[in-house]
Amino acid sequence: MADVKLPFEETLIPPARRGLSLGSIVLLVGVALVAVIFGLALLRQNQTQPTSGPAPDFTLITYEGEEIKLSDLRGRIVVLNFWASWCGPCRVEAPALQNVWQRYQDQDVMMLGVAYTDTDSKAQAFIDEFGITYPNAPDTGTRISDWYNIQGVPETFIIDQEGNIARFYITQVNENILSTEIERLLRGEF
Amino acid sequence: MLKQLRNRLKLQRRAACFQIMSGFVIALAAGFLFAHPLIAQDDTIADDAVNAIAKDLYCPVCENIPLDVCPTQACIDWREDIREQLAAGITRQQIIDSFVARYGERVIGTPQDPFLRALALVTPWIVGLIALGTAAMTFRRWRGASRPPVAQPGLPLTHTDEDYRQRLENDLRERR
Image (cartoon, rainbow over all chains, first blue to last red; front, side, top):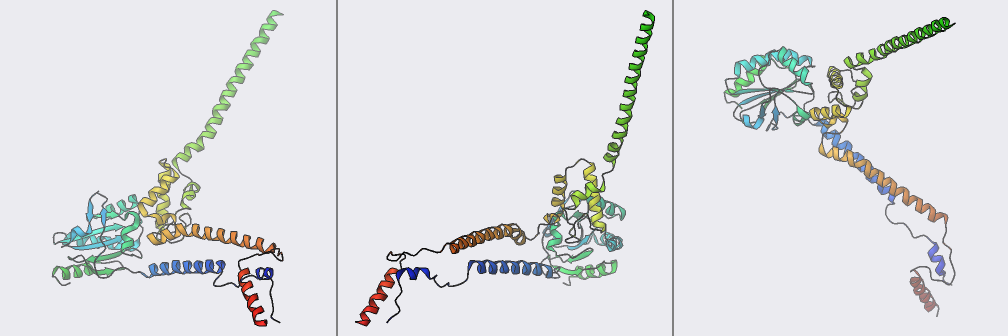
């Protein structure tokens, strides 16, 4: 005799579950989300300073109130220096940067100083102390340092006449290093 | 008798005058004593007042270290900046806003990257909603499990009756 089930018996047996439970889905989504966050953070950490290609454009307002846009300086060599008043090597290289500026300012060379996470009063005191005359500006919102992925200070980028990064220095620079590179670019050797 | 009464009144007046004068001098001295530290505080803002704001700020140079305990020169300069702003009568929120404007939202612990920032702001809400939904569903499931359905023979309970009927008729046909 066949095994006959009564109607009410049918309803008492819970239907077999198919697929993942809600808890498993939530757990999987959570794990995926954490993986994405860690992945992005890792990706960001591994980003380094650009050493070639177009220099990220920016506009800065100097401590004197002058507005300077990097792309407006096309056709000139730009020495972009990130510094801070609390940074020891920045104090060492400051006279060299000023000397290079004095030497090349009439030869289509522009020097820009960007004060990284500095207070206005300390930055201004630094500028006065070293008699710096080239334009300097605060990195408002630390945006410029973000675009250039700087890891610390001092860091210096030399941007050629076409707006491309020609050279990047992660350490303090001296007159000789800067002059050599500027001379090369002035000769049109890109 | 009248003279004695006058002398007595005179003495009482002198005593009253003395008491008033003494009270005045004491009040002046107390005022000076209590007012003095307040005058001093206007000139120098206490470290605690600076750190109360600094503990909620982060210097980009020293990641994940609150400004109040960060030992670098950059952080010392920032704390000095807070002190100067407090001395100038600027409020806590205005000081924090000025730091955000100058150094970006990372100073209050918010990521600079737009995607990460959006993720950081939205994720807690999403996780909270998912947790709430899961908790509600689990609760409903527990309640359902604790109350087994009462089966009544003869009464159709579910849509599976039709399947059952079909299978039963098939079985009966086979037997015939």
